[in-house]
Image (tube, rainbow, N blue to C red; front, side):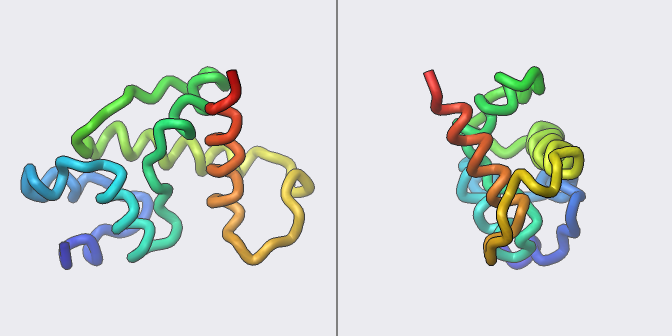
Length: 110
């Protein structure tokens, strides 16, 4: 997993070079990436559903796919950049993480 330090945001293509075992759990792999580079979003099914409700279709997946995960983080980053700055109060949590949490809550709504 030391190779995760070689991956630079927003690049996700090096995920393809990891072993099948390392790529077998996208949520865990994305959490490791988030730990090493805080700008990477943690894969979350509720966030994916929230993006889908906004019209951004990201396929569900079990194994880490560099293209799907790249689309996922790019979509969150894009929405964060176009959202009004005033929609989040000043907080010590990164704005991207707050935005992802809001998308996850929206995805959980009936």
